[in-house]
Length: 442
Image (cartoon, rainbow, N blue to C red; front, top):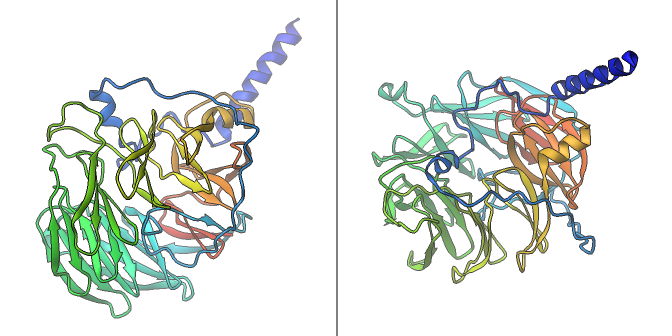
């Protein structure tokens, strides 16, 4: 009997050891990053919200997910990849072997989004440096710091976009400027004194962005002259939600911190429609709103508010689908289906036409079952569609690879720790590691 109990204890201890050494789970002793993507944390403190969605719904066996042709990408000129903020089904060799690592590209904390144009990686750091690293030459080919000495110790939160050798940059100080990295020249610069607080979009000769007062700016990208200023509802309290802009071929879709999404004509800048998605009944200007990136695809808008996921008709703003969960990650759209991760880390597949839930699985429980350990906490960094598989990138540099049916195929540990958001170029995975070295994985 003593031998039996000894064996039981040994098995329990070995299970616990594997649970810790797997490296998949969040370390309970680690601190949370200051720039954590948990944009809903303040809302949870002040809201009497409805119960969290936590339903496990097995897949409808009648549903067969059709695989799409994969896309071999050669550039990443927008931080959210496309004008509509949606990402493709990227092609990847999936060997997960490190084939290149650069030297340290900056000694300062980076802004996590990176760009890629003409075999050049473009990054920024919180000191205000814009750095361009050539993959082919294996060296930094351009570096500029626009800021004067009085801003030296101000942390710079930078948004940027690149087009034909010119990087357009906005910041949390109130500057917006254009830098040609081939000429190593600032082309123009403007100071609006109020922090810019959104991504940047380019359309034809227009540059589109917004500030923390929820004003939408339309600039002439050639000289920085202001073509149009469109005010929207301002809020008296700033939160961690950042305004988001998405484009179709004819419209600007602008989601502000008040919870209103606007459709604006790209030619005449007139309003087509707007709708407020703030869940509270008390619509005053001090209300906190938290949302996700606005994804435009196939005449529909996909986005989350504090508690709900929406699909809107892009032409009218009418709500086509409303679900009782939300996500901070961009949804993946594949044929007639939507794949997303909820706030509490459930992987959910929806029918794009009627909103029916095809399946819903607790990712942490799926992982625990897969590696045969106890369920613990996961910290998710990004969600992408790769080789017709759902790649869930964890902050600790593991990748959980799901098939479209929601089953885990494998769990991969990257050869280096993720610091930037990952991008895919020419079947390669590219990112900056914790030492700010460029890493390329095939």
